[in-house]
Image 1 (cartoon, helix red, strand yellow):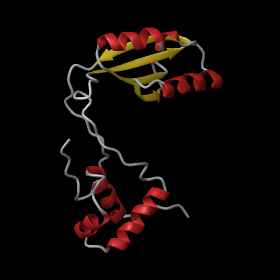
Image 2 (tube, helix red, strand yellow):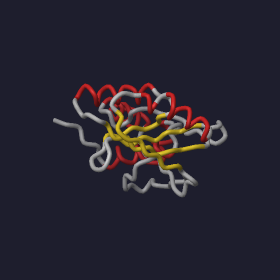
Image 3 (cartoon, one colour):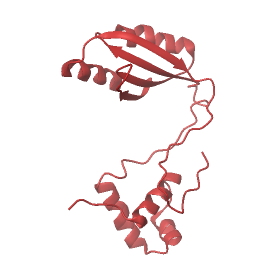
Image 4 (cartoon, rainbow, N blue to C red):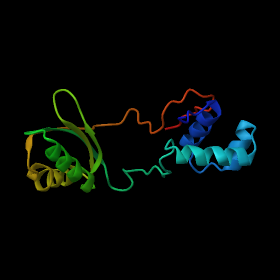
Amino acid sequence: MAFIPDMLDMCILDILQQDARTTNKEIAAKLGKSVTAIFERVKRLEAEGYILGYIAVLNRHKLGNALVAYTSVTLEMHGHDRLSAFEESMRSFAEVQECYKMSGQFDYLLKIVTADMEAYDSFYSNKLSKLNNIRKIRSLFVLSETKQELGLHLKTEFIHRTK
């Protein structure tokens, strides 16, 4: 039988989304459960693939990555080998933070992060546009960020977003 998280599991997930450094002891205190029960639930959520990993969210501006571009890519041909080759290239490019296969007007949407326009131009000219099977590339550049959320809305009482 497939594992389906209950409301307690969802609360644990929500707390960890807010701060992945929250200890099992702290989660247990917030939820009125034993540390052992929380430990076992967290391990199960990890084993079942609900928790994929734990990361620190970094300030890209302070680290010199000020430019964000959303780039749509249309391919010439769409055979399995061609799609796989494109996706493998995207995984290898450090500048590509996200890559989505899309339906509609283009084939892929990329989120590309670089230091500045010069670095983006270098990525575009020396990597992206040199790939085989590219028909069209269109880029939109982010001027400012109004909202950026990393967590999912799980509809628990522990939703206290600060980002």
